[in-house]
Image 1 (cartoon, rainbow, N blue to C red):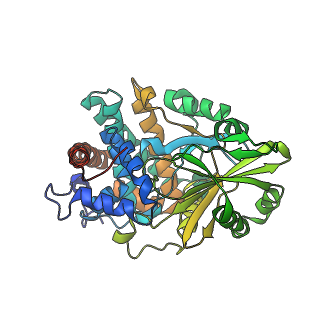
Image 2 (tube, helix red, strand yellow):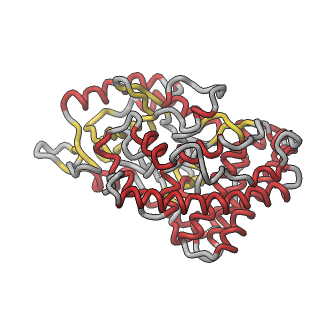
Image 3 (cartoon, rainbow, N blue to C red):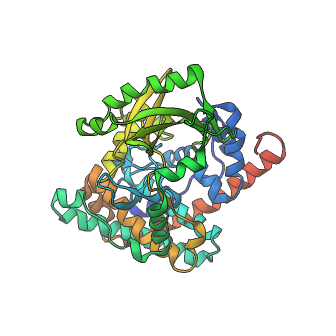
Amino acid sequence: MRDDVPRAALAAVPPASRAFNPIALLAAASAKDRVASLLPIKYGRMSASPFAFFRGAAPLMAADLALLPNTKITAQLCGDAHVQNLGSFAAPDGKLVFDFNDFDETISGPFEWDVKRLAASLILAGRESGHRDTLCREAAETFVLSYCRAIDAFSREPVLDAARHQVHREQRVAPIHAALLQSQRARPADLLAKFTEVAAAGKRRFRNEPPLVRRITGKEARAVLDALPLYRKSLAPERRHLFDFFRPVDVGFKVVGTGSVGLRDYVVLLDGNGPRDPLFLQIKQEVCSAYSPFLPNARTPAHAGRRAAEGQRAIQPLSDLLLGWTTIGPHQYLVRQLNDHKGSIDINLLRGGGLKNLALVAGELLARGHARSGDACMIRGYCGSGEKMTRAVTDFAVAYADQTDADFASFIAAIKAGKIKAV
């Protein structure tokens, strides 16, 4: 496989003169099966910086990666591996864990596509947080070498030991520690004050603050609630039992993320052991992975919500207790708890040693996900000692970050010319 795709070849980037218009491709992918009126919000968020643009441009990177030779060594891809898709959340046993937390684009594909995307994100996030280019490059090198060394270790361990491996450096890494503290403070009860109000009858209901949050009533709300029994079937029996203690109170609609803006995203408020025991379920529309057009032979469930849920379970040793899927009308949805003790990476905390320390943990986490869902021995055999792999992927990451800067400039020019509406 090294003969077919030498590790040095991983440094290659797509030609500057692509056969497609990157902004047109991005606009077409963003508009597919989404709420058109919300797309200007997505484009507005993407216009904040090159890194924000990168976060919303997974379809563009998928098309770029498909132009290049790949190893054909597969694992379950996170698909949208970047530093702000790392975060903390509550595991089923209530303990806080730090891991990848977004799997909208997950699919079985060449393992190096995840490695390349996360490495490029470190360059862009580093630039945004004020690092010099040499330090951004060092962070990308740290990440790739950490990935290779972790894969080497996992290839030598008993299979189940590798699958349930836990990272134990989180508390010593400032941006991760901050995310964990944020998780500690974030409770479902806090969301009551943030998203709901007390109605005249004393019942809680969602606030109406369009376009970002609004209350759903009537036929649309009934359709959402009618989808809960199907969601219940996607849960394991012991989790169904827990879910059965909750009763729905109200339904809302929420705009989330950057790349996800425009997808239908419902939130259901439920009461468990009384009104002081709230549960917020997020029912988030899923469409085909951005990588699907370029991986026609990938084994993936036909239901996009199931694809996202099962991909997450394949990558993570610990996932949301209530992770499942359902269908509402013609659309497919992932279901999970909304913000249950969730914490995110603050770009401002990546200054100093934060970027490099985060890169070290990110490499270990991605390697564990690929070891769980792919063949650690096969990946290790390709990566070797990691030195050639590190040089090549880091060269790619720097060049692709530069390409992203150029694409971002074209994106801003399209907004100024009125070709794209952004708010």
